[in-house]
Image (cartoon, rainbow, N blue to C red; front, side, top):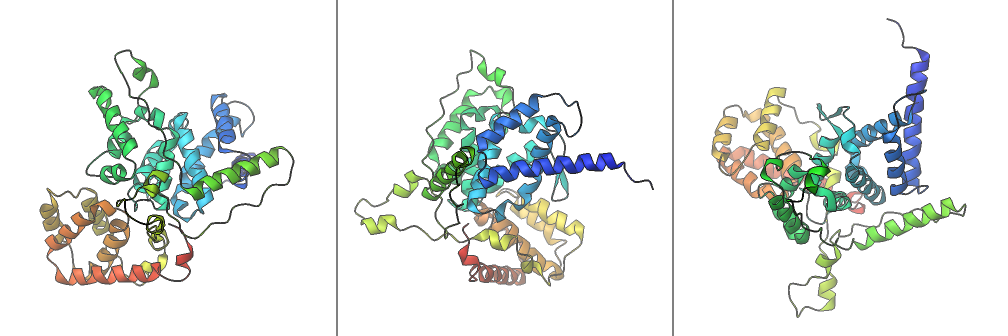
Length: 392
């Protein structure tokens, strides 16, 4: 078998090196998010001609690389998480993500970069309210909130009663109300589209409501943004850069409006300042030790389990329980319980009551014992000393 030409390898390596250097400059504070987005915007408009890697190839590879790295997003420190959220949101805002059609593999399936970005937003908003991953999803949305009407399917998903809608409404009611108004203003024939052209929304007979004022960011996020801006300014001026931010202990990512709200007008200042302790669930969700020693069932059963949970509703839970019960063997109980707790209940908090009803409908008392055991196993990992140093 002949080897590929060496110039092709060197070109591929040069492309990878160039992309990595640009991302390193962003995260190290040598350039701002807007600087990188402006550069990518310029590269996207250039023809894909010339000696590789061309600027257009660099642009496309940056989008693909960014989407591929989102598999590890829960491991990012808080400052890098904020930068990534702002970058994704700005790339969506300027319609750069949808220009790249190269598929990215995620969990054995192929997706376009736009599909991955939409999925990341919705998956993040399923996390516990005011956790850092929940805030990650909100921050992406905030970057293009005034243009979000171009993505009707995303708007509908954000207000869906079956999905993230109730949690999103309780945490960011102004955004929720705005999205409902948008969907009512968008013509019915456009509402099921993943993306629509901006020119369609400029029709005289379409009257879109104005975007709401953004909620003030959490204090730590504000301080990190200011520090990053100071590092960028110092680098551009040729001056010593301030030291990079070190992650603080777990802190609430609630917006200022929510943090200042008090349910009881007579509560003391000390009571008002107390914030709920946020547990770092991402640590256990990616910890390989949780599945160690648990025999995996056949692939077809794993697929059936995932499909069952994906399509589960209050209306069909008994039907789905009966279908799964036919194939649910006792030797699958341990794997199934860990999957249910780790991959579903911990991530889709708003659906936990439905999952409990589904567990009851399965009618397997031994399985309930396994679910309880899996819950305690994950809590044990969650409350370990090293995990407590991480923010959600």
